[in-house]
Length: 219
Image (cartoon, rainbow, N blue to C red; front, side, top):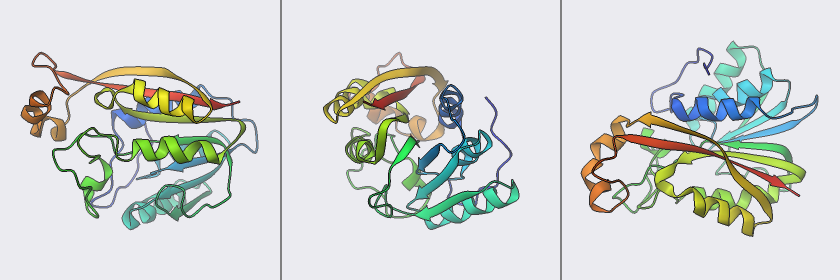
């Protein structure tokens, strides 16, 4: 799955394996005309633009100002109508609901307990278990899904997909892993490989990272 050529301002997450995996899952969804899609943590806007190309009406949000600007620029350059807002998850969208939510959140486990407040690392740092943002998404996303609405969420297997499935089920959604892929370790994981092995998050024999896409549906 290829992504369109996109510009990324310094400090904005560049589409990678996780983006393409989630994009492939999005291609499997039925998006009738008028489908309303929300892209949470849009970064460059890659997923938002892809949904727009599929005919959806798309809103995209990100907490980083540079990401918001980047997504707006990319939607303009590619001629796609995407509403891009600065928001901490759904905070700028009170009372709004959607047919489909897609999200590629920060999910890399970190030895630092505090999340960064600015800079590129904000796009991947996610606390000691990698779930600092994931757990928030599992709590708030179900409240913004219409009946029959769906959530597509990508993250590393290091974050324990069973926890994600359980949290979404507790919120009333039918959840399953719909896509998996093994990818080479990126520079961030390689830089903290010793810590990951010492904490038991990775085995000595692990040389690849598993990515998963969780699909959850509102009854």
